[in-house]
Image 1 (cartoon, rainbow, N blue to C red):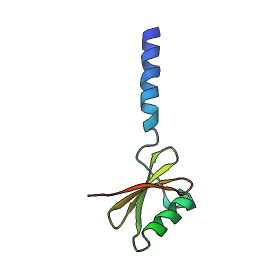
Image 2: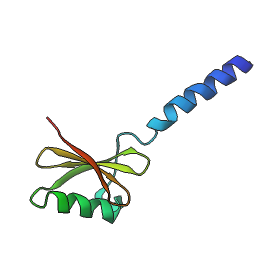
Image 3: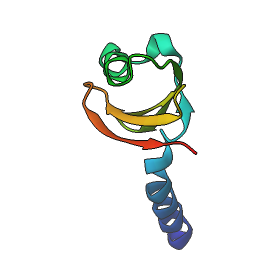
Length: 83
């Protein structure tokens, strides 16, 4: 029984980092700092979708095929072309 319980705790610990991965967030629930950074980075592009990549990190998908990684405080952490 202890082995089963220990195995369960290990599995939960390993998968807990994925709790926030790939959760689409309604735009009205996204922190204003994230929206502002995305709009300032690419003012001519539209925000198509926002996912919570990990705790306090948002992946913003733009109409110009760019993905921005922005902290909840609005810091641009990275970007990449979404091919």
